[in-house]
Image 1 (tube, helix red, strand yellow):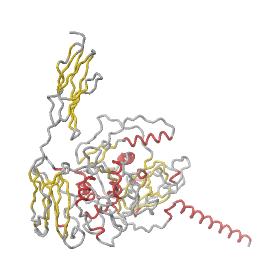
Image 2 (cartoon, rainbow, N blue to C red):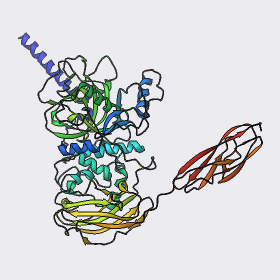
Image 3 (tube, rainbow, N blue to C red):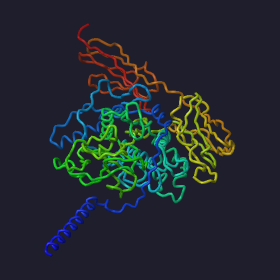
Image 4 (cartoon, rainbow, N blue to C red):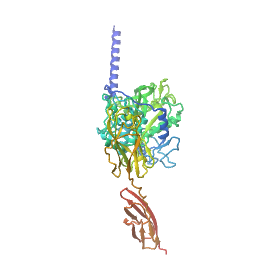
Length: 635
């Protein structure tokens, strides 16, 4: 009897201990112990073979990534924390030249000097989600917009903020971009997901509207939440300043993308190079989009490696260690990595080879998902069956595939602005107003007098059989497209080609005008044209200004040598271009002189490099030239 009583007490103690452990685990997640009622929608549509070929032929593939200034700063912060001397500022790639890439079968393009040697050492951890420019976690709700959420809300919002120093850790939606802007234009009017290629095409050619300008809705209760297009002309023109350059893609197979289940041609060396590129981009301050089968993710918690304190802050946080199966098409964003994180993949409580390190992932399922909307993804989960897991005794599965589909990630950069520290500004835009009931029949193209043509990423037979506002009733829509890519600087007729694939004459063109943005002039005011679309080109004339004469400084002097005191007459009369001022530096410590022709006396023996700088105030352009003056005591 006593023995039974003792066993019962041990049983109670065991149950109590288990409950305490369970409570501790729940508390360790903090707010993540709350019930996650957010809908877990996906929406990634894999590219077709034709879309993959187009990607390979037209978009840059990353072959090498060099560390930039931010990576150098991060590396030295790590060294300082360990009591090590900082590394000198060398081997840092110039801004915008971090990536070596190739397009199609073309040569490798690099912006670093020939023979460039990159920074020695690698950053062990980087978390770009902690930077002010990364926005708060939000939810796509029940709408299948994961692709545009990853690309537009997270990647573009962060990239623009990172470039211009914007703080997105607040409730201000003026600096955050709306997934709805892109998703509604490319989903054919149905809520069944979208492809990243089509989403990037919109961002490349039209930019994006902010969350304030075109607010996102999280439910499909009103079909307009995923069907309506933005019809505000000011928003279309504002979006243009956030255009991106053709996006980059990185892949473990040097020749290009393979099947989503993995590519048998991926070697261990290929995988290593790809993984290094990925981490260097993150250390450089980028965030990367990728596709996955989220239903196949297998989760555990990060373990504490007692041999180092570097992982203490991450212990017991959720981590995915493998992907099994091909269900749950989804896109997410890689925001950082940490080499110290330990995932006990073979569950033997020993830190084995291949178990250290994880990527930090931002999801679009709201802040109640996993760890405040983030989750870690073990490095080993990036491996499929070829290359296989690097962990001895790792659980095997015939369904195992790389957690990053096809070993592929996508990187973006903004369209280069002029001047470089401002937002991109178009030179010439086309503003036009249409009326139609079935936008999937419309096709738009811009043309120039020199024969150039430009097809947009929008209004190309997209949107399903709906009007511009997502209803079945014809409505007006005003759009603004960027002519800048095809300008040749010639005057003449700039055309808007409007076609209707089924019912020519049914749609109506209500107005068309050209706006020279930089000169702030308008040609052909947007008036009530109201003519039926007849599959033709409608033109507006533009007297395009002649190309300005290049600014060139030419300095001359007489005499150029003699005994002191030597009076020299300098002239810049041979200079050309729209010159607003002439500045002379005589190289002898005397004040700057101004004017196209000046005289100066040299009183000391020596050789002087007199410099003329001609300046054009309106364009902020300058040009310089030198003339050598020799002052000697000899005759």
